[in-house]
Length: 103
Picture 1 (cartoon, helix red, strand yellow):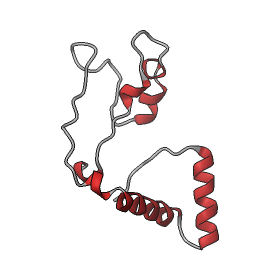
Picture 2 (picture 1 turned 135 degrees about the horizontal axis):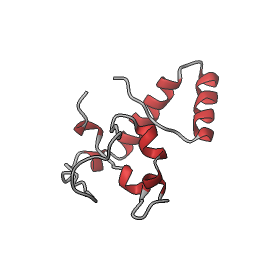
Picture 3 (picture 1 turned 45 degrees about the vertical axis):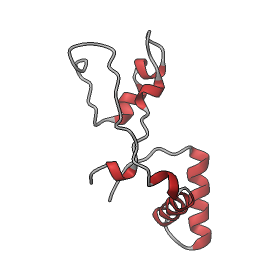
């Protein structure tokens, strides 16, 4: 499955360096790290989570020009950065279990 993730610059440099040292790909390093993490915490991932409830702050849907498929724009918006009243970057971050994401 192809996905897009955002990583800290220092972390990504370390992943690339590690992949080079191992003679493998960045994808292989990230995949193995995720598998190890999930295996270590398997007891937590096997318990179903409560459905995710999203809070809305206004009526009438999305503001004009907002594209929920463009995460870069959403993250850089004034409301996400907290510069507008009610702005809260944590509202844009939801932890959804991987098994709940359809591919």
